Amino acid sequence: MTGELPAQPVIHEVNTRVWLREIAARTGRGTGLGDVPKDAWDEITPHGVDAVWLMGVWERSPEGRAIALRDPQLRAAFSRAVPGIHDEEIAGSPYCIRRYEVDASLGGAAGLAGARAELDRRGVGLLLDHVPNHVAPDSPWATEHPEYFVRGGAADVRREPDAYLSVGGNVLARGRDPFFPPWPDVVQLNAFAPELRAATTDVLSRIGDLCDGVRCDMAMLLTNDVFERTWSGLAGPRPREEFWPAVLSGVRGRHPGMTFVAEAYWDLEWALQHQGFDFCYDKRLYDRVLNESPEAVRQHLLADEGYQRGLVRFLENHDEPRAAHTMGAAKERAAAVLIATLPGATLWHEGQFTGRRTQLPVFLDRRPDEPADHELRAFHEQLLAAVHRSGMRTGRWRLLDCAGWPDNDTHRNLLAWCWQGPTGRFVTAVNLSGAPAQGRVRLPWPEAGSGTWALTGLFDGTRYERDAEELTGPGLYIALDGWGTHVLTVNPA
Image 1 (tube, rainbow, N blue to C red):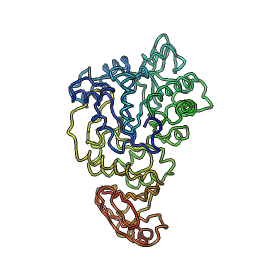
Image 2 (spheres, rainbow, N blue to C red):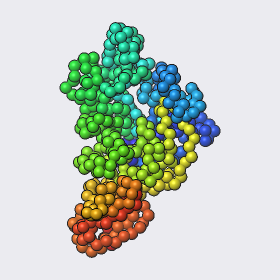
Image 3 (cartoon, one colour):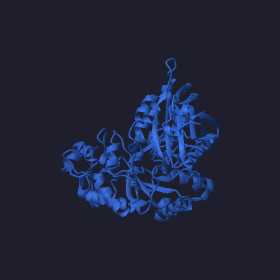
Image 4 (tube, rainbow, N blue to C red):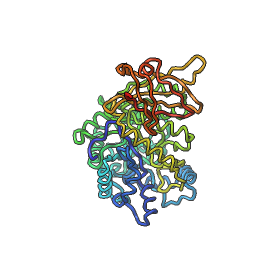
């Protein structure tokens, strides 16, 4: 897989340090990335996964770890997640990076190269992290390149010690976003500084030598509008060019097929796509599936197909609560079918397939033992494999209307869409409610003509035969129990 990822990749996020610790406990010997047994690689690359995101491989900051250990609120959060957690099991934040070097405790550069080779043998790509907004206060940049940072003066440190700190004779601003107080363990890079843009291009180019793609943390903070709003008057004049086009064009000169994923919020996904990102987090869909009505989800899916192909669909990640905690089992399965059959990239989180419920702070190396839901894992593996084998997402996608009757408006809880392409025709229907729902879904294929068509369940092989004029006229009749789903292939009988 070394090279370009598929156009709509399925990504599996793995908390690297936690995963390696558990492998070591199972095998009885220390484990770096170069020592992972083959069966462990097989577990995180079930059929249908296109890329593994090894989260947290870079050298973490000793100073940032010390700050975390002194923070009573963080310590309380650590103990809630893992009762009895010990200091040696607190590694510090993977987003408080000292250097973009693979941590020696994980096997260093050689270990990562071995990991990439194992993934490549399975036809699976590798994603790594990049944090563009800030670095650790003990990063070599803080003393060697103060021009990369938002800076203040001695008076700022005295007046706002929570917002500034002295590093190597320079006063640097602590990292932040415009809506929250400064983060105590990082210092703020200056997105307007041409020196920082050049340095970021170099860092990402070097990361690109090691992997197939990068997930950029809080990428929207570096856009000119957001950065100016956050640091007005402190960062120098606003450049004519945006940060990301300047950086990504330079990186792609060296790695033209490298995939860039933006962690993005505040409805800036479209802007970041236009600034060069291949994919942006679809947090709106996550929120709507979790908390809003089926109609809100349907309205979200009315967006242009090209835009949706540049989104990352997910039900959890390391920043969100576990899906098994936020959703009942039936809703979780329905939501999984939904995101697996939509256009765009799909992100799954290690432990999601087995029903883990504890959202682990990223600072920690150990997570609590939780019983594995083997039926849930089998469901997810079947879902990913079946969608992958079908090739449906290589075609064109279209949202479909669901119609009902004057005395039955349960069709409002149904969502339906179709794919058509070189591997055939496919229809997905999801009841995004806990009550039974019925409706009709007109299929947009007038070329189907007349005669009988077979609709076959992609997962169980159940076969239905329907008249073509019904499918393209009044529409396919759908009746689903609460949180029920259909994923059907559609072919002449």
